[in-house]
Image 1 (spheres, rainbow, N blue to C red):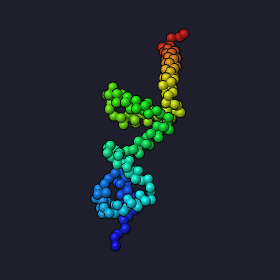
Image 2: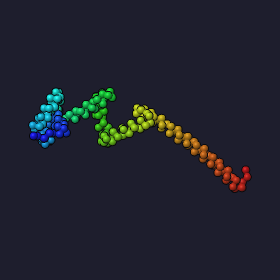
Image 3: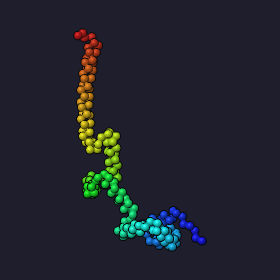
Image 4: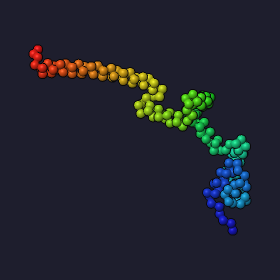
Length: 179
C-alpha cells in the first residue's frame, strides 16, 4: 500500500505544473514518482475543466521567458492603472523620462526617487494640501516668511531706538548734566 501524498506537496505539484515545468522536473523537485505527479494532475484536470488552458498559457509564456507570477503582477499593475484612469501611453512616457531625469541629475537611484515622492505626498497630506497646490502653498509661505522677517526687522529697529534713548537718558543722569 502506498503512502498518501500530503496536500502541501499536491499544491506544489499543481503550481509547478501550471508554471509549465515538466512532469519529470516536478517529480524530482517534490521527491515523488512521475506516476504520482500524473495522478495529481489528472485529478485536478477532472475537477477544474479549463485548467488545461491555463497550463497551455503557462507553456507559451515560458517559451517567451515569462511565468504566471510575472503575468499576475502585470495584470495587477494594469488594474491599478485602470482604476486610476491612467492611459498606458502616459505611464510608458513617464517610465521613459525617469532614466533621463536620473541621468541629468546624476542620480541613478530610483528607490531614492520613490522615497522622496512618498515624502512629498506625506507632507502634502499632513498639511492638507494637494500636491498640485504645493508650489502655490510654498510661495504663500515664502511670502509670509518675508513679511515676518520685515516685521521683525522693524521691531528690532524700534527696540534699538528705545534702548538708545534709554541709554542716552541714563547717561545724562549719571554724568551730572542737568537738562
